[in-house]
Image (tube, rainbow, N blue to C red; front, side, top):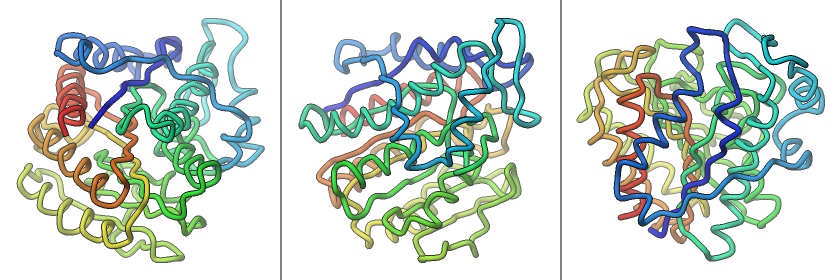
Length: 312
């Protein structure tokens, strides 16, 4: 698939109190790993644009947006905390706006016919941010903003958000539960933060699919569950655009979870997602960086995933 990487240098300015796991070194690890592969010679890297208020408001309440705009400290030493692990520093607002705008920009690039797949290498991540609540390291729900942009601006009738992060994408589910045009599917370790995503949670419109795996799950089992319990049911609903919350914290080296995946599993996932996009969505695919907290594993996994997209 013809692939582009969207990123933002503003992501380096979103700082968090040490020793916070979601820190600027994560973005550096991904971009360094990309630079060490053949990707830079094959895949264009473009700076992400800011999200507009209208794009944010399709997903988030006015009070939520105001809280983010008002939450940035005036000095470079302070932090503003929304909860025990979600913070803003001076520079966070710009980073968050570009991470949110990135997914809408990705949709526009695809619709212009320039590319088929886009990987958004930005931070802060987004899939835990609910309509009215920043949480879990996330300020805006980046992937949901892209999905609503595809629906409301480009006129699609159904899109899918597929979340392969090891933590349940509660924020994306929160959006999908009141938006029947979104099919949301997540595979995640359970029990684990944020404690949501039971398989009995199917949404008000039957458009939510949760697949849980236990601590210690290995790649073969994870792959089988994705294929049989996530991708096949989603394909039946024929989404016209595929969005992926690409978290790499299911890697065996990750300190915040307990799965036993490796880079080959993420390469396989990219292959399957490309195949789904070709089958139902005319190869329209947007993937957005979410978790991954062992820097080496994160960089290797993300680079392998993107390289597979570009060859898919």
